[in-house]
Length: 143
Image (cartoon, rainbow, N blue to C red; front, side):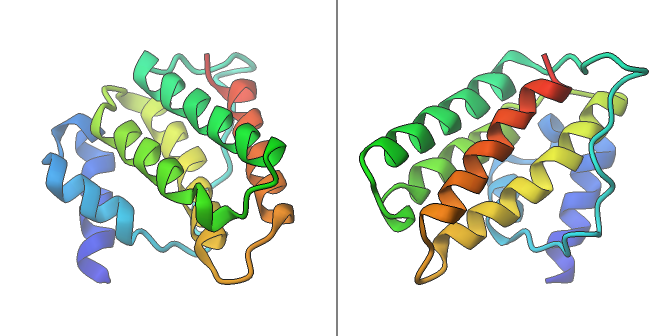
């Protein structure tokens, strides 16, 4: 597990776009971080951070997939793979740098934890609704 944390730390320091695509996908798929290991997302002196369009698009697609699942009463196991694909795409297409990039990672690590909860046997609507609320919070911090 330590190599994955090392890869994640390197991608954070170097910028997402500098990590090899295959390695970034492996790091995302194996990411396991304690809930309190990352600081909470903060604003840029009261303003939203500017995110790259691909990241915002990915979050919007994840929201759409989750809303569709809620409307259709789908169990998480039926749609989590689509969410994970969008999550990997966000990492692959990340071009953000500096503090905005750091804040994005503060947002994405808990998101990954929520996706992991959806994959557990017995995951329910409650986890789906929690995820949707978290995805909706993206727009409080990023534009």
